[in-house]
Amino acid sequence: MHLSLLEAETLVVEALRRNRVSAQNARSVAVALVAAEAAGQEGHGLRRVLAYAGQANAGKADGFAVPEKNRPFPSVLRIDAGNGYAYPALDLAVAELPGIAREQGIALAAINRSHHAGVMGLTVERFADLGLVALMVANAPAAMAPWGGRRPVFGTNPIAFAAPLLGEDPIVIDLALSKVARGKVMAARQQGAPIPADWAFDREGRPTTSAEEALEGTMAPSGDAKGAALALMVEILAAGLTGANYAFEASSLFDDKGAPPALGHTIIAINPAATSTADTAHRLARLADEITRDPDVRLPGRRGQTLRRLALAEGITVEDEVIEAIRRL
Image (cartoon, rainbow, N blue to C red):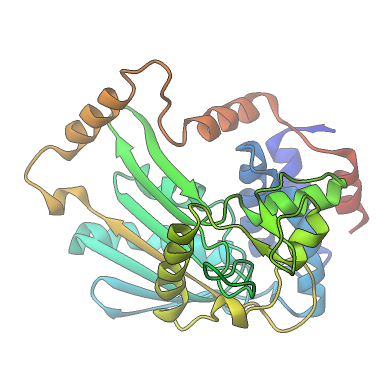
């Protein structure tokens, strides 16, 4: 089915509002999920609506939560997401951190008792659009084993980074520390499709092409031991420092069973004017120009930005069964 972005957002808002979610939170979630869909990240898009609604109905996610902030240090913002969805808390961070970064030179948001962080590239890009450099990390329910192990301890634990470019779209880097995002495996299971053999392991630690076995087993880390080490780093930054649940303590984001996942996110926003006397905007543009001198090279983030522009003009196409499932809500 083909929908405009506004039609898709309205569909999601109405579905969530009928399933114990406030109008404000439903709008925040809808904008984020539709933006993910528009950027070609379907695993973080409309397929998540059913789980989100089910968790609100079960009380696993508080659809009426209002994130609360406090500022214990001049450059630090603590945000309690209240066991609600991540997006209202992320919206609060985007509203508050830029002013702190311009005032202090650098600002950090520590978010706890949160939920699925979604496509984090879309969050850090919002800071870059304001002229700031931003880094974000988030943990997720356990899906990846330490290198050499079989028991999941870490989440896929994504990292996202964005930097502004003079007169151009920002550079945006967004990657999960598993070989692929777990949302892609979830999408394959919903479609009844196999997955490549190097994406995941079954419960016995054997490579599998079954999405079902992969979701019961562990994800393969990107870069093998290096990816597992980086996942540990993210676990410390996103959960250890924020007081959020560790990945192995968090419940699933895919069902309505158990306690709230209570995950953590950390965002660091840097004011380039504070870090150098050089003209940072021109310095970054020079680097980008050097990278793209090779005609076969594309700056990170460009694919998603191009798809979003196209979606803004032409809308998005979503599988009929996904739309019908949302409508049934």
